[in-house]
Structure formats: C-alpha cells, structure tokens
Image 1 (spheres, one colour):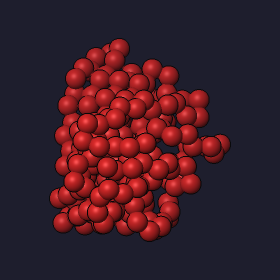
Image 2: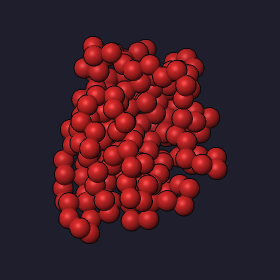
Image 3: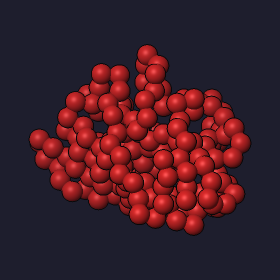
Image 4: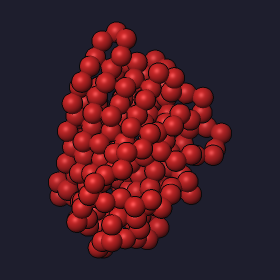
Length: 185
C-alpha cells in the first residue's frame, strides 16, 4: 500500500469477538517525513480518565499506531480521547522506553468530541508524527511496517480492533510479526 499526501482511508476490524457497536476509520497520509493520522471513532461508551503523558491511555477510549522503520525496534503511539498520549519504543513488549520530552515535541495531536450521549459517542483524533525527527526513518520515500488499533481496556465492554489481523488467541497489540508493509511516497 502506498501512502502519500492525498491520504488513504481504511476501516479497522474487530478482534477477539469484541467491538460490537464500535466503528473506526483511519485515514493515513504522508508528506516529507510527516505521517498524518485521522481516526474517526464511533463507540457506545466514551472514557477519558487519563490526563498525563505516558499514562495508561489504553484503559480509556484509545487509538494507537505501532510503527517499525529502520532496525528491529518499533514505536508505539497511543492516544486517549482525553488528549493524553503515550509514546515509547523498543524491540518488544518488555523493556519499552518512553520518548523523552524533546522527542515528544515531534508528535502533535488534537481530539474533537463530535457527539457524546447515552446511545453513541463519536470523536476524532488528528495526529502528526515527524518520523525523521523521531528517528523512525532516515528519509523518504521508504517502506515502514505498521499496524493501527482501537482499544478500551477499562470500558464496561472492553474492545479491540486493528487495521491488520493479529492471529493470537488473546488481545496483544505488541506483535510486530503482524505489522504490514506500507510505502511512504
């Protein structure tokens, strides 16, 4: 799949028999080393409790991007509907290293709550990741490996969705073997 300035919209799919009533469309775009993400989310419950950097955002209504550029490390960017986000890198689930404050300046995000009532919550996350400044890639064009997710571990009905399938019996997003190649053009 080629990702350029015009963007490419993709629907996330439900995993592990969860996610009834949850719909997510991710639009990925790219220009000059900046990856843009626009998640459009509709879900039954909106949770926005985490308010600090690198907190447990996956317990909230959360969208995520895991990306691997050069080398064996991959980075995870996890965004709560509260506006808080987690950014880390490493080779696997264990030993993740949080990006420092200087690196976090290369991640820009905004959250817009579109609707929130007893029947439906809709929200949008827009993010820009400077992949060169974050040392994920050296230059463009290039190929990266990635997967994108929606979760809500702390919701009354936890749910898990992904862009590309993850073939393991229980929820686990830290599985780079299920990332797929994307060309940044």
